[in-house]
Length: 570
Image (cartoon, rainbow, N blue to C red; front, side, top):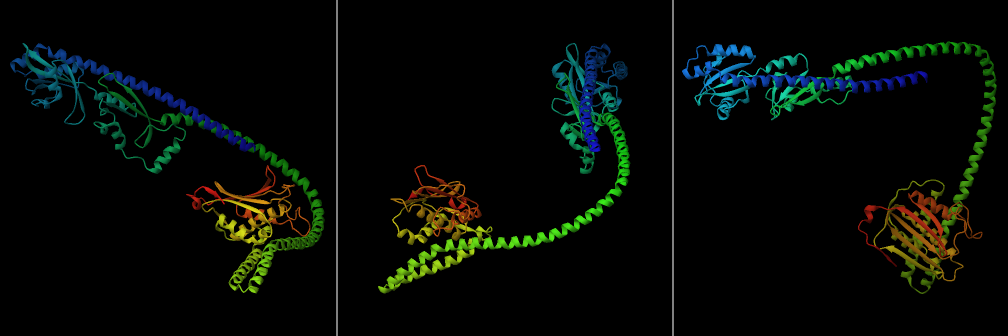
C-alpha cells in the first residue's frame, strides 16, 4: 500500500508539474516569439522608410538629370554604385523615358527594358514615389521604390531603388525556426524557407511531406503534455505566432518548435523522478527489513504450527465423518422434496382437469339426447368438441409443469381477442348453467402478444372461473372483460362479488377461501407463473364500488398492432 501510494502521488505530482510548467514555458516562449516579431517588423519598417526617401533625393540630383537630358551615361552607373554603398540599397537603376535601363548598379541590367513593369508604369502615372513588389527573373522578390524624373516639366526618366530586405531572411534563419512575411493577398513575399516564396501559408505548410504514422506517434508520445500544435514544420510540431505590419496590410508569421519547452520541462521532471526513486528505494529498504523481522517470527511460530497441524488432522477426520452423515441427510431431504413436488403437481393436474371433464360430461349428455332424437349431425359436433377437450386435457398435463419449473416451450404471436373468445367457448357449459351477465369490451383490431396459446387460455379460464365462484351469492351476477392495447396489452376481469380479503396471500400455492373439495388453491399461483413466463404480470385489487378486479399485463407486439382502430364495446 505504501509503494502504491508513493507511485500514485508520484504520477499525480509529475502530471501536475508537467502540465503547469508546460503551460508556463509555452506562454513564455510565445511572448518571446512575439517580441522577436516586433523587433523584426521594426527592422523591416525602418529599412522601407529609409529606402523610400532615396528616389526623391536621386530624382533631384543635377548630375542624373543632366545625363538624361544629354543622353551621356558614361559615369552615371558609377555614381549610382557610390549612392548604393552610401544608402545600403539592394540595387539602383535609372530608366529613360521609354523604360530602357541606361544606368544601373548591376551592369548586367544595362539595356534591359521595362515598359510594362509596375514600378515604371505606376511612377509615370503618379509622379510621386511609388512602391511595388515584383518577382526577380533570377528568383526571389524585389521591393522597389520608383519615382519619375522631369526636366523642365518634361518626363526624362524613372529612378528605381530596390530595398535590401533579403538580408533579414538570412539573419532570421539563424535565430528563429521559420519566419515569413505575407502581403495583403496572402502570398508569401519573404521567408526563411526559400520554397515558400510565392505561395500562400496553407500551401507552404502542405508542400512538405507529412510525417509518417510511426513518426507522428513518437512525436505525440514525446509531446504528450503539450498543447495541440498549431502546425507541423519538417515533421515537428510548432507554435504559430503572428503580428501585423502597419504597411500595405502585410503580416509577419513565425513558427517556433516545442523543443526548448520540452527540454526545460524534462529537466524539472527528471529531478522529481529522481526524488521519488530515492523515496521508493527507502520504502523498499524498510519493507525488506520488515520482511526479515517477519521471517524470524515465522520461524518461531513453526513449532506451534506443527502442533496445530496435528490438531487439524484430527478435526478433518471428524469433519469427514460428519459430511458423510450430512450426505445421507441431504439424500433424505431430496427424496422428501420430490414427494412434495409430486403432491403439488397432482393437485394442479386435478384442478386443471376439472373444467374439461365437466364440459365433456355436459357434451355427452347433450349428444345422448341428440342421438335419441335422431339428430346425428349435431351429435357428431358434440363428439368433435369432446375430442377437442381430450386434446386440451393432454396439453394441460404437458404444460402444467410451469408452476414447478420455468417453461421452455416455444412462444408464438397470439391474438388476445381470439384467446378470450376461445376461453369463453370453453366455459360455455358452466356459463349456461347459471344466469350471469358477461360484458366484453375489446378493440376492433387484433391485439398480438408473444405467448403459448393454450397456456394463455388456461389463465383466462382460471380468472373467469374465479369470477363465477365469487358471484354465486350475488343477486345479479355480472362479469366484465376489458381489453386495451396501449404501451402494453392489458386484460381486466372484474366481477361484482364480495371482493378479496387477503391480497398478500392471494397468489400463494394452496391458499384458498373456498370450502374443502371446491378448490385446491393453485389456480392463481399457476396463472401468475404462466404470465411471468410470458414476460408480464398478474395483479389483483378490489374495485371501488365492490367486487374484485384481476389485471393481466403482457408486452405488446407493436408491429402487429400498427394502424389499429379504436376499441368498441360488445
